[in-house]
Image (cartoon, rainbow, N blue to C red):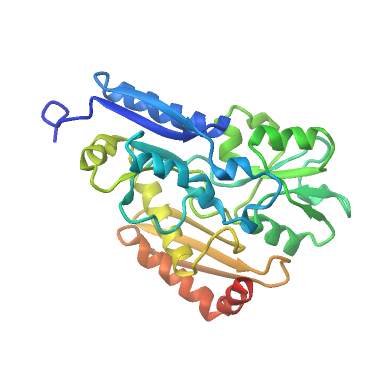
Length: 314
């Protein structure tokens, strides 16, 4: 349907967390919508979520990354906002009834980044060096490869984490490359960690735009921002995680890549200490990404991932 015949909203309010990265993401979507629909008023409603307020405990102990999403969904439900912009890796695998991902934007670099003031890469860190990360996924893979390092929790927004590094609390920290690049902090990256060595989180680097399921008008409005290849990859990754009941309480990663009309998908499940790490890889059709994600999950379960997941649930 052409822009001249479709009814676009006269006003769109974007709910966003107030961290610098979240606001960059919301402003990016705002600016793209303004360029597409100059007749539409687009504004941002900044909010502080429970996940932003509790900074002294790892997310896996207080309910997971869904704590970054709930308040934004409340704003959608009560009508104070129309859409919410999320880092997709923060979005729970099962959305509450009445909510949907209306659009998935093109992915930034999905890999993890090594950030340090004194060392060039992970391999150069001496025994006992303290590495900061908030992610069980990163921690388990680090412990599996570098058992001589000391892994410590690291919470806060990107700037807070960098400040803690600069104050000398850590020899190095691991962050998502996408966030650093989006904030213009790419120069802080000393090394991009290969996805073979640190498999990314499900959805890492991709933006998701959430709305209420009855807002068909918004789905049409957001369609030009939807990136089909990224969406296929993310749908495969999320299907794998969903089949494994994944959350940030579970050390797992999933990463899909498009190659022609095929999707290559890799996944892993590990014990938090990295002593057991199960990997799987499958190739499937771009047209049925969820089937591929489920197949990778079944492969992992067949190798014994179920026992690891059951132990973590205790």
